[in-house]
Amino acid sequence: MPLPRDIAPCDLDAPPRRRLAVLTCMDARIDLDALLELELGDAHVIRNAGAIATTDVIRTLAASQRLLGTEEIVVVQHTDCGIHRMDPKAFAAEVTAETGVEVDWTVPSTDSPQTTLALTLEILRAAPEIPKRDRISGYVLELESGRLLDPAGQ
View (cartoon, helix red, strand yellow):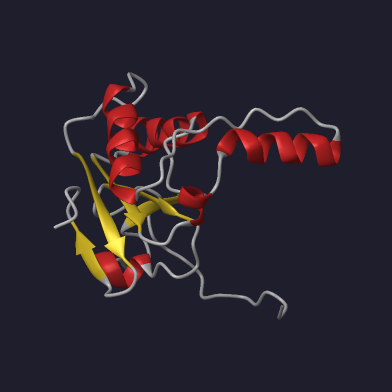
């Protein structure tokens, strides 16, 4: 890996210009800036394995809205996600067995991006920590075509 380098100084305000927060997967194949036409300073971007609404994601979105004025949340799941090919409990047990450290990584995931998206949206829309839950939407990125599909897979 090359050493980190300096970047241009940033004179942007901390609140995102588009008042948008995005939850997506950590998958390196997702070019979120191109997909949503984002520029530096437009949105808060939260990435984790599977774009799952964990307690830390809810905490982060609560801070995004309450402290930095975001008003909309977009969730982007994707096809060919590794989270859909693993059992979260088995993975946690494997890490526990290997390290001797008890982990509790029970996360809601399924074998399909559309179903995981529906589950994630349901969790976010029910989270009282997030004050603005009326503008939460989600999509599935079809990696094979680059198309952004609505939750029904269309």
